[in-house]
Length: 261
Image (cartoon, rainbow, N blue to C red; front, side, top):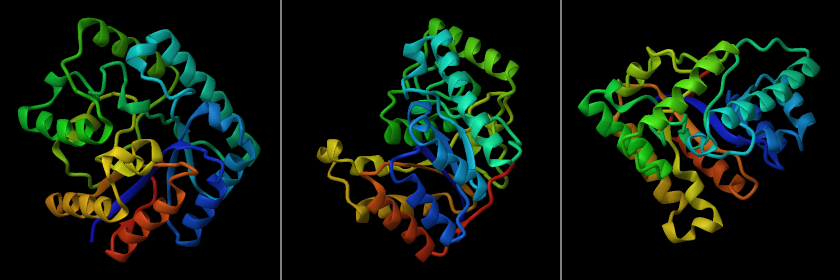
């Protein structure tokens, strides 16, 4: 049995409330990283999710790469989204204990690296290339000086505005421990579920629920001594598969853990 922290990107979808009800019925805690453009369409669903005990965090506004947006626009998108999140917590009558965010495509300006590559040792870099290169299609080339400048600018401004990464317990993945000791603001995941391969637009990837379940099982088997931070995706199209993928984890005896706040 492995402990899992469930984090879900790209919320809220049109059936976000259905997803939340399904998770709540199974006592599965979840941390949702919300796009501002979608959040603006379904504010009442976010308020109800907060009342139901789910954690709502920031996934920028339009889901673009920060390295392409540049620092000013990337920061503007995060702050614009945070205004809606703050309003939702106020309407729910719940105190927001932490200002958390995750960059779309895990791109904080460094084109996919969570920190400059030299921060990590050789083994950690190899693990990151497997996790983020494979699951997010980031090429993880060495960032340029301009990328590093964008990243540092974004980090400094978001820290000043009170953003901080969530600290998860008992995660023993070496690259993640290195990252968690840093002052970086974005909350990372250790297993980025390729559930998005099941979108019709990615049909060429030939993914099935069975193949993705095996992918997950193989990963867990090779990292058996560590709790994992699971990254999944909220989508109306993915919803039937999301149920099956999470149900498989429950059937395997894995335990979903409360989100630290």
